Image (cartoon, rainbow, N blue to C red):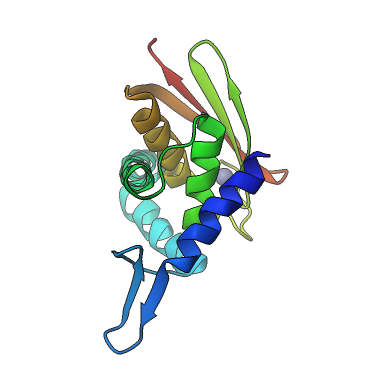
Length: 175
Ligand SMILES: [Zn+2]
């Protein structure tokens, strides 16, 4: 059910997506967006990791992802309205942004476990360690905005670049 509803939102957005070839603009529901190849984004991230080291880069990319999540949530709120459960919120946003699908959300006492399939950050990549810091940030940013509280901790507990086909993020809150 969740995927059908998310697809409805997606269709709604695609209808509103306009390319102005003259001006070189892509506009979605009146808001300017850009298209970037997943491989280009991966290459940018690799440069950041190379320059800052994996620990600092992980933090920077996580923070950047949180802003993406927060701003995407705002657009959802303004344009479509917020679905009434967190799985649909995250799935609608990742579908809309081309970040894959949110195939599962497990809600614990203080921890939300978000499973993403077809994450663009590890698309066609292999790694010994999880590398989707920005997607971890997107998940945390969306949850923070949806729940209106700050995440205390987050971790990518499974990454499709390491094994399997899911990236799984645990986002925990103080209360
Ligand atoms: Zn990953």
